[in-house]
Image (cartoon, rainbow, N blue to C red; front, side, top):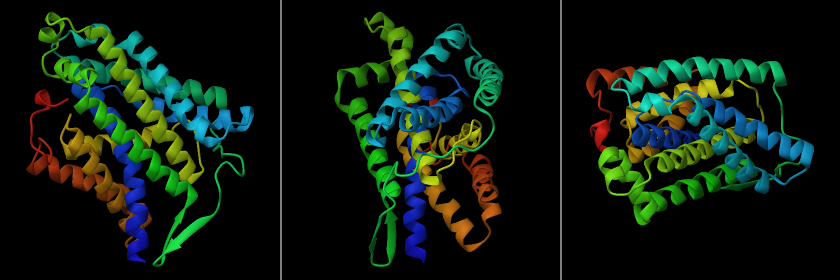
Length: 293
């Protein structure tokens, strides 16, 4: 029983980590708190749903296309809402207020268009078979979640640490003015970061939708709350912290639901958030936000 719960927690935490990585990347590089990131999570799930239901695509094709579509939506929203705010001294607070209003409007529009009802992927979207090893059962959906999360996280880390593009992104994160003087096209980097972040958020929406087979417009709202927990506990702007905190949050939620009470899992997560803010406000990995990409 414990082994099964731990596996379930790791799989859920992998999706939390994937979602939080995009949020962390956006904040670490662009220095804004963009709450419309939660909308890209919901949008990714609905795009994948449309591609599998209306177009008839296999989920293996629908997932990357949904991620790309979410990334493009993120770029559009970023271009409309944030360029002027980034130049202000109070960019974090201003972006928080502007994008809060924007995301509430977007959720309302999506609900008016698609309705509030829960949607489900068509039968056969992913195999219902499961493998069992040493008493631990893993479904095909869970296997896809783990594989996709590992692949996307690995690609992002490789991009950030081994390529010139990643070096340019880190340079903009550290000193945007100096990066511009060195010939880096900072507006283009900002759009690229929005694209990458939105794609990670959209992919997370597809994976969560597959895991629970339940999609509705406001699903990004609860995920944004978890995203805040993860990036604050892990350290604002710290990608390593987001990975570890995301996995830890998934395990804690599953263990709380399995052994205490499922209605308490969110309370436990936010109790941890409060404890971290009281005792170590810079997050578990303790480096200043301004020094991380």
